[in-house]
Length: 332
Image (cartoon, rainbow, N blue to C red; front, side):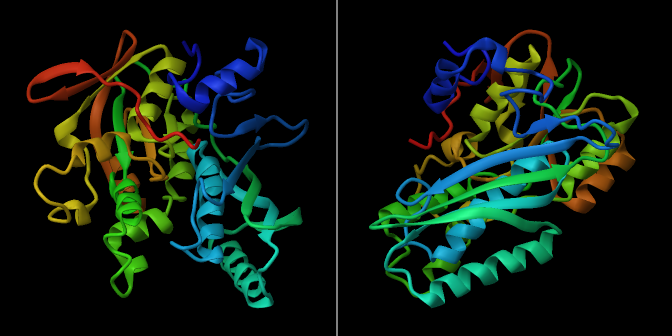
C-alpha cells in the first residue's frame, strides 16, 4: 500500500523505487507538483518540475498535429508550476522527433513555442533533440518563481473548504470520443468542444499565483492540479495532509458540452470523478466573499466539499456518504 501518494498505478512505482528519505511534505522532496528550491540569498524560492509526453501514451498523431501535442505537453508542465503558486520563467525542451518529419513540421513546432512564450511570460533556455525511427516525444523541465508561500499538497486543515476551478469531465469525454472515433468522420472533429478540451487544455495560470499571494499572510492553502483525475488528486491531498476530505457529487462542475452529448446511461459521473488531464486546480482553504470574488475573476471556482479530521476521501451522493476510491487515469 502506498504510504505517501494515492494508492495504485504509477504512484506505487515511484514509492517502490525511492527510499523514504526522498519524500517530503514541504515541497523539498518527492511529493508535490514541483520541487521547492530555497536559493541562498534569493528573495523568492525557485520551483522546478519535469514532464514527458510520449506518442502512443499521451497523444496520437492520427488525432492531433505535432504542434498541438507540443502545446499540451508544455501546458502540463506550466500547470505544475501553477499548482505550486508560481509563474513559469524558464523552460528546457527535449524533443524526440520522428525521422520523417519535414521542415514545415519544425517550423510549426517553433511557432507554437514562441506563441506560448509570449502568452505566458517564460522563455526556452535550452534542451536537446533526437530523431526516432517511428515515434516521438516532448519533454519539458520548467522553472518558475513564487511570490508568496508555495502551495503544498500537505496544507489541508480541518474546517477548510474544498474548491475546484473550471469544469470537469471534458478531457476524458473527449478522449472517449477520439477512441471510439465518433467524431473523426465529421469535418472539424478537432474543434468538437470535448475533443478540444482533451487536445488543447487551458490551465488557469493566473489562479495559482493569486492563491499563493493570499497565503502570504501565513495561512494554509493546499493545491494540486488535476492531471490524473479528481479522485486521485483528492486522495493525494488527504494522505499528505493527514486529513479527511468530504465532497458532494451534486456540486461537481461538469463541462457544459457533456449535457446532451451522449445517450442515456453514459457514465458522466465517472468522468467527472476519475477523468484525467483537466489541468484545473483543486485547492483548499478559507476565503471570505471578497477573496472568492477575486478568485472567480481569474477563473470560475466552485466549492465542492470540506476538510475534516480523519483520513481518506468520502463522497456524498444521494444523501449518503461512501468512501471514494482513487481511480484516476494512469499513464501506463
